[in-house]
Length: 184
Image (cartoon, rainbow, N blue to C red):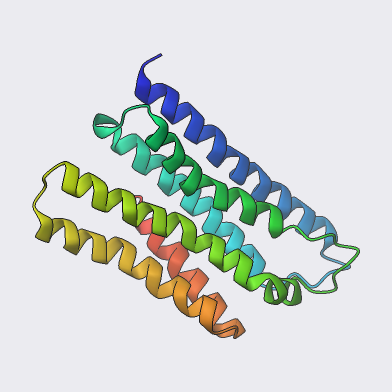
């Protein structure tokens, strides 16, 4: 097994856990739909996690020429994937303890949205390191960084600051659409 294949398998396993957890959460939401008000925010968050997992997997695959297997790369994979696994677990409340997933999200918003920020921060650091190490031209890298990461920060930071449902849903919708568009 080549170095990249080993790293890719490790990352795919981590992201696969997040995807499986979100799928389970969606199934549990469906089963609880008569007893619990589902709303839109938690399913939107689940969709963001699914899209982000797919996008991250594609990003690593596309970067395979630059990737090696080492401690730094393993920690990068952990920093990028573990927050999605945490989110995918936290969006699943005990349905006998909640009447509304909107209220549940509101109570746990800082943890859920804060966890969304961790992969963005990790990706920012990795992009800067690879740009400097690869001695790429800084201006095109900065422009690409601003487009890719700037939108992500512009969605997540307001969600951390303002608890309003409209801010949360708008941030999640824009984040989802942006993430999907970045896959192409």
